[in-house]
Image (cartoon, rainbow, N blue to C red):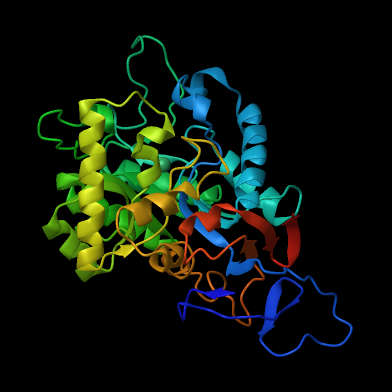
Length: 389
Ligand SMILES: [Zn+2]
């Protein structure tokens, strides 16, 4: 068993599960208990991907799903995605907006938690807050045609506050804010992202979310938009491929978490043919990652899966290690550290009495070779076995 808290391998562990929780670790199994012998596999806590889109599929990167797919169809795709992600060892996911599938993420979360369909525990963001002409606002269409939008256009502080209330009403666990634009808004020369929010707006969003006891995740590449997000008190910065050292230091000071989502920017994600620009983005991401590690930013495992095939989130571990993180730290980022971000560290992220019985087993020792974490042979979530090869 790999204990990510202590950072060591425990030989021949015994984990006693009762109902959906871990009862004890170590000692002997109680008399008469049903046993599952996992042989020489390595046992770990269930993994957490803190930036996912179960309602988004890779083909949606080609054709905007808001224009071509019904929400019912997208929900069905989400059911299939959730199963693949669970099979890959991810027992919890923070699903950072439905990308235009409305409140289908709430439906998927609830259907999973009621046992209607298998999948990870989901924390969902429903719609995201953006601005007119910003990220996730349909671009390039006839202005005379009214189109549904994949995110909510909130062009003022008041509109942002009202939208948060609507999202909370219909089941949001997290609030997602687009604090910078997307790649099409990035200055090709300077790599300066588009800032979408002012400090005052971020403060208003964070305060309104806090009223409902919700946290805010900000899509932010860098620059002024990212700075406003951090200063304004969001809990996590998403992507952040061009965060400078001053901002990284401020994140350390304020305790802001960072989900790098290295995977989605890598050419292997297949989103676009590599260009000089995309190579510079990846280069900057790597540099930011290494600076963040050096400065002690709280890095949490997050991938943006959905933009690339579901069930392949664990590719992120390889990139983190390639960029210089130890396998142990990479695994911590997807267990104990992620649980902290989600304020669920008493529930998930470690193998200890009282935690949910979210356990996976992989072939090989991922501390020796991180690739072992891709060989998931066993998945238990809340005491139920979902995979046992
Ligand atoms: Zn995303």
